Length: 373
Image 1 (cartoon, rainbow, N blue to C red):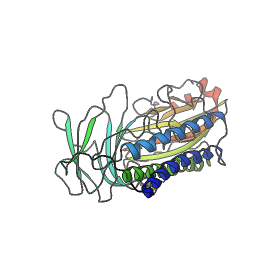
Image 2: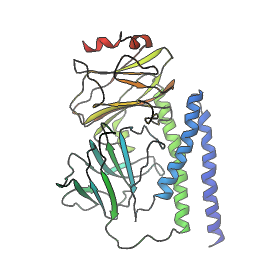
Image 3: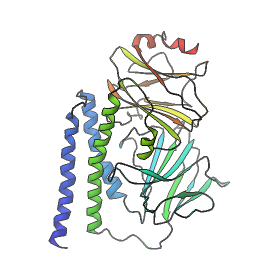
Image 4: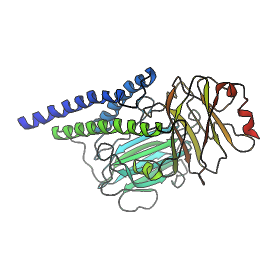
């Protein structure tokens, strides 16, 4: 090992540590709420993103021998992660061929997408191939195989381009406790070799990418949140071309909004109607665009869980105290945060309608009763 290589290895570690230290400035950036809850969430968020950076780019970053892992879950959250989703990710190289093998299970919706670009490089994840459960061919025993390649294949085929870098699988529940997720593995087809020992230059490159991901991603989602907060207590449709550019599912319409409620206020979110769709869901996120802790709090609802009004509309209520409405989602002690709403596979766009009302009116059902007329 040369002294130059030694110096680069040391520099890679120092740069990673310095980037972690510098990210602390996000907590007191202009526009960031300074209440204790947002600051506590932010401190934890910065630590979680460091774990994500190391897992994504150090532990699971070998496209020659990919492994499906969970990039977001109960304790790593980013970019309005969906509480109804099981996320699985693998790093790939579009010049190789891969096979997914699995059993379908009973989870309501599955999508698989390959993409080029990454948050570590250019803030984008542009789709290069897409397959969903509505077209996935399943064998009689519930098993399936998917070939991932540039050349079209018979049967289930997920396309890549030469510069494809990642695979993302979304499994979306309607009732997480009742449905069985698909069990899926990935293997590379065009090699019989075994993984080689990790070499130093590869390790350095991985750390440099982890550093770039951490710096870019923590800043990017903070910037998104600032943009969202410019229009308080709204839930608008986002630019769908932008959503796709950063890795969104093409079957989903994405809305991102903001809430800021006084102790005596509630937000009423009304869907005038529910178009034919795979499902819809709404979730409550903190300022850092992390879903709130759905292990312990009811911070999301979907089509299968919500009650429908007599006229086909849906009335949802966001507040801290449990109201008369069955369709309650909680702020879990947050005075301010972000929201995400999704139509999945909807035949038409129906925009949520937002109003802020006195808390007493939803506790007594005074405001909610009118929605059934």
